[in-house]
Image (cartoon, rainbow, N blue to C red; front, side, top):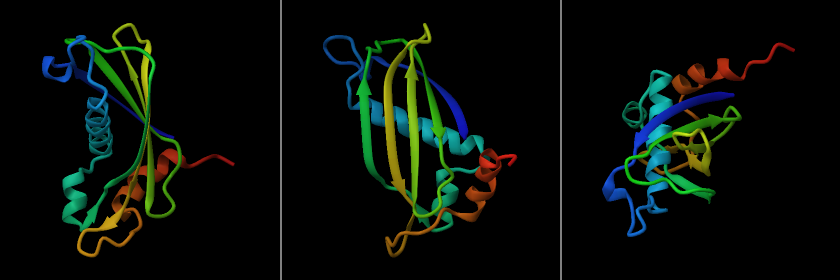
Length: 139
C-alpha cells in the first residue's frame, strides 16, 4: 500500500455562511492530495500529460463526518490500496483536523486515457515502476 499525507490550511473563501468548508471544496482538496502523492513518487501530472496520458475523474464518493472551518490546518491522508492492473486507479482519502479527528472520507476513481484518442490506457510504465515496490509482499 502506498500512503501520502498533505496539509492544507482552510482559506476563508472555501467556507460557507456557517463558517464551515463548503462540501464541494473537498473535491479540490482530494485533487491537491493526489497530485502531491504522485509528486512524492518523483512524477507529476504534468509529466504524465507530456507522455500522452490524461487522468479524468470518473467516480467520487464522499462522506462528511465533522466540519472543517476557516483557518483549520487539515491533513489529507491519501492511500493507494491496490496497484492498478489496467486503465483504472482508485485513491482513498481521509481528512483529519488538527486534533487528529477524522472529518471526511473520500474515494476517487480515475482512468488512464490516451490524450489524443481518449481511449483507455494502462498506467504509464514510469508510474508503475515507482509504485510497485509499495505492493511487493514477502511470500
